[in-house]
Image: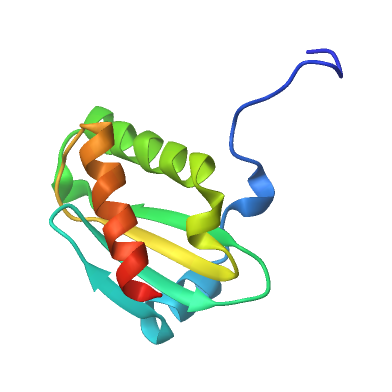
Length: 112
């Protein structure tokens, strides 16, 4: 890939990797529940996030599909997640993008 090609993926710098940071958001952050996901937010200087999913949810293809959809929502709407660490925990499989987007938007607006 040359230097002039625009990449549309989510930058690695926006992903929460350390288990201690994820645990801090889960334990001390604000929790909002929806039908398909739980949203945990914790105030911070920069925005970063993680997606968590249990193996009980379904097969790997379903789990990965949900994670891809949620990462795309996060990438398209950075203004929703400004100045906070966010963890999105997937509770139930649902692969309709716009319905997931509406639910996450509603949960983010509740947490403001």
